[in-house]
Image (cartoon, rainbow, N blue to C red):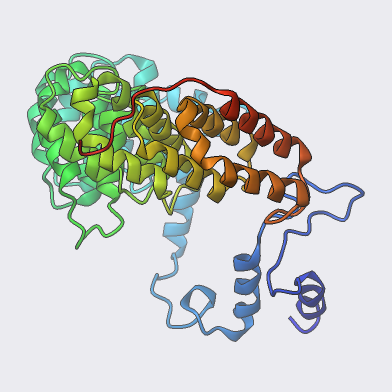
Length: 397
C-alpha cells in the first residue's frame, strides 16, 4: 500500500471520500466510466490491516488440499475447452455419466446431465435410484437431470415430492427445479410449492433463497409450472404466494411474479393490489440489474386498471431512479403509464417540472442531460393538454 496504493488511492478519491472507476490508461473511457467503486477501494485499503475476516483476520477455516485431492480437482476439470465443450463427455458411457452425477463438483454434474440429455439414453429408472440414494451429491445430480433428460418421469414424481420437504435446503431447491423441468405432469405439486413459497423458514434461510428459486420454478414464463397458465390453481394459495414473493430481496425473483399480472381479472387482482403497489414503491435491495422489471410491470398494471395510487408511486419511482444507469428507457415507460391517467396526472406536473430542471442542470447526475429533460417537458405538455378522464379506483375500495 505504501509503495503503490497510497498515492494512487489519494489521487482517485473524490472530495466527498468516494471513488469512481478510473478505467484503463487510454484516450477514451471504457463502458464503466464513473461507476461507483467505493466499496472495492475500501476493501483494498483494509487488506494490509487484516482486521476483517474477508481480508485475512482469523484462522484458516478451510483445510488445504493434499496432493491427491489437488490432482482429483484438476482431473475433474478435464475434457472441456471453449472450442470443444461436448465431445469428451459425449464419448463417455451412460454408466460413466451416471457416476459423474454423484461428483462433489456441480460443474461436473451439470456437464454429465447435459451429455445424458444429448445422448437420449433411457435413464429414468437410474435417476429414481439416485434420488433415493444416501449420497446427497447423487441426489443433486439426479434432480438436475430432469431439466435436460426428456422422457416419462412419472416414476420420479413421488420421490421428488417428498424431497420438497427435505432438511437439505439445496435439495429442496433442486427438487422444485426438477418439478419445473418435468412440466405438466408435475402440476399436482403446485399447491405444496405455493405453500412453501408463502411460508419461508426465515430462521434457517434468512435471505429466503428457497423462496427465490420457487418463484422461478413456478412463475417463470419459460419453464415455470404456472408461468403460462393459472388453470386449476387455488386463488387463495396464489395470493399468499405472490404477496410473499413480492417482498423477496432479489429483484429477479420478484420479476418472475409478473407473469401472473395479466392472467387475472380486475376482481381477481384486487386483493393483490397493495402488494403490487408496495413492490413498485420499494425496490428489491438485491439483484438490482433486474429490480426495475417488477416495478415497471406493477406500475403498468396499476395504470391499466386506473388505480389512483399508481399516480403517486409512479412519480416517486421516476424521482428516485431518473439519474440511475440505464434510466432512459425506464423513464419513457414510467411517463407512458403516468400519461394514461389523463387529467388526473396534472397534480404531479410540479414534480415533473422539478425533475426536468434537475436533468437540464445536471443536479443529482454527473452531467446535464437536456435530451432527457426535453422528454419530461414533452410529457408535461401532453398531460396539460389531455382531456382523458378515466374513472379511478382506489386500493381497498
